[in-house]
Image 1 (tube, one colour):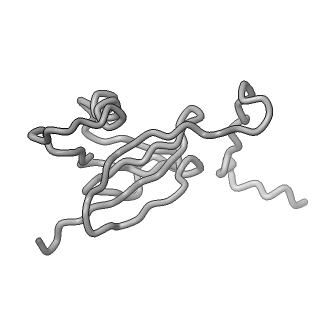
Image 2 (image 1 turned 60 degrees about the vertical axis):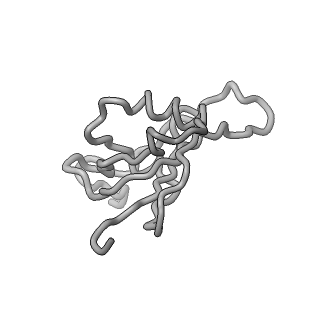
Length: 115
């Protein structure tokens, strides 16, 4: 069907890698965020249910649009057809109880540190 887009968005959220599919991806009105809307999940009539995808479906149940921080995005691809949405745990080396401190990409006033 011409004009129908399917995007695969892979991003990090709370120590897990999310892979979701959506029909719309674009620049958000909020600086530093990507807007994702039209989330796509497997068919409801499917006999085989994937518990991972069902968990994602319930997490985004009433979400019209989601805003993902740019620094959390690993990759966005336009694909020919939708795959299965999933969450993968990040395998950490050493102490997995340490959460990295988020680093700002944009600084107020555009200060480059030069005098």
